Every structure is written in structure tokens, then in C-alpha cells.
Image (tube, rainbow, N blue to C red):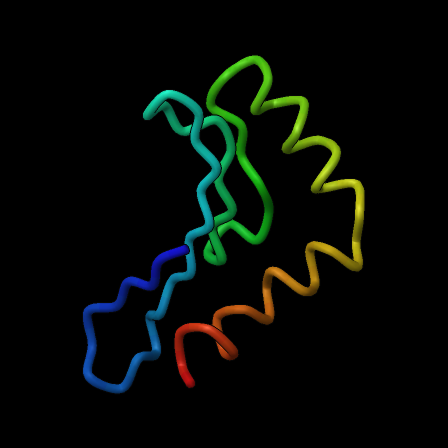
Length: 70
């Protein structure tokens, strides 16, 4: 998981959570997009499963404040 920002007040904070296999990113959550995006065939399947779980997505969206803006 990573946090990126470019302003001193953190208003543009972006939270990224990536899952990789053999150094290739399969699926990634981006708080700006608000959902998981798959980059490989397997990653697309995982993204669909993650995105079909509203409670899990809400938890990931909250990670911006918990993980990045602590």
C-alpha cells in the first residue's frame, strides 16, 4: 500500500493498494477511482470480485484517512 500527494494540506491524497505476482501488477485499488482495476486476466477476475463487495470497497476507501492521513 502506498500514499501519494503533491500539496502540503494533503487534499489530493491518493491511496493505492496493489497486488502483484512475478513483479507484474495484477490488480490495484486507487482511491481516486474508488474501485479495483485489473491489469491481467486473473486481475480482472479479482477486481470484479472485490468490486462486488460494497462493504469491502467502503473499507478500502476509508484507508485514505486511516493509513495515509494518520
